[in-house]
Image (tube, rainbow, N blue to C red; front, side, top):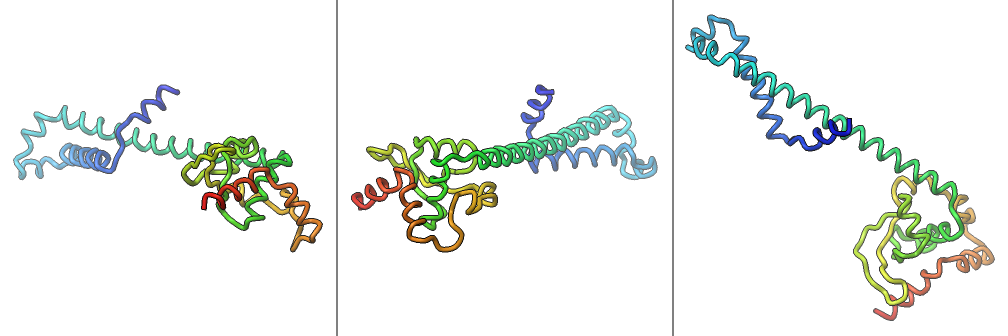
Length: 202
């Protein structure tokens, strides 16, 4: 089965190839199925009789190609859906077991009111959330002396639809001074250092 899927993936599929195969199929079928009187009027009776084997081979070859192309597209779509479901499952599993550091990383998007937040790629919580499909890198990497490689990150669509304030331990409505102080104290260690580094760079 694996070898069959490999062969299907290697099959050259494209609009031009498919159109050529379809036209070949239709042309061969038309020549084979045309009434004898029509072939005689077109002076094709003798030619079709001589080339009957090759016309039949053209029908078989083009039909097999079109069938294989349809199978390839169908298998590709099925595998893509399975991968999407697997990614959703990984995200759900990760969101159900978030630790304090991972919650703090995700809260940065809400505390900064941004959809993109620069984060160090080597940070354990950032790396874990990225591997689980919760975070996604969307920009180029910059290198800092302390944090190392840093890149803009965003919450993936799958994860964003499942994140709640309760899950991130965010207060409902406007936070009190005590709650705000607690949230700021629990921010990732890189949040303030990156902000200072960018101010100095500017």
